Image (cartoon, rainbow, N blue to C red; front, top):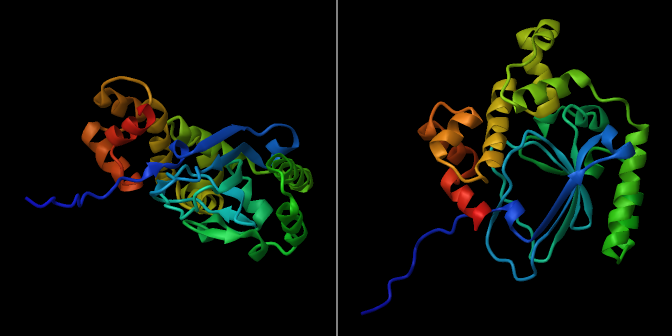
Length: 256
């Protein structure tokens, strides 16, 4: 009897589970523009597809010899990174990217844009980063350049940060924010700073709550309610639309 080929499609692997992913809080001058500093190194033998799930944020990265701006995503992104690639990244503070880039984030949704297309003053630092042969020196230079940029940047708008924090914990936007701007202006400001309106942002931040909760043992029906879903079916449907994975598959990757 002939062997029957396995036609099942391999599920993508969550990016943070592929290779070595390190993340820490941005401190000092960096914290004016950025909230997290991270690095991701794929194994040299890596094969398959990775999924970067939406988090309502945008990032500045160094990869493939270029500085890139990674816009906010509505659904999971599946970047084609070569095996052995190392990516250095800085995650913008909520509400900080717009003023530094001078581009509404609604124009960057789902896109990876070379920073030199948005700013004409980055060729020198790209050349210096390319010349570095030591990983630690590259990271130090990237961080030092970003610190100088943060020091020279104007202050981010705190009201958009407050909106992000409120939605991140499952609360409605603060009454003061709604009262200050009104619903229509709030939607426009949200699109400018996050790429989409408050409802979409709320959905994505609910997914992020789920990702934190699902790592712990427990009934998924309870996890769904704690994350803010109507029930487990609602959670499964919504999470699969955003990531292509079910909550059970995500838990399996975290716990595997």
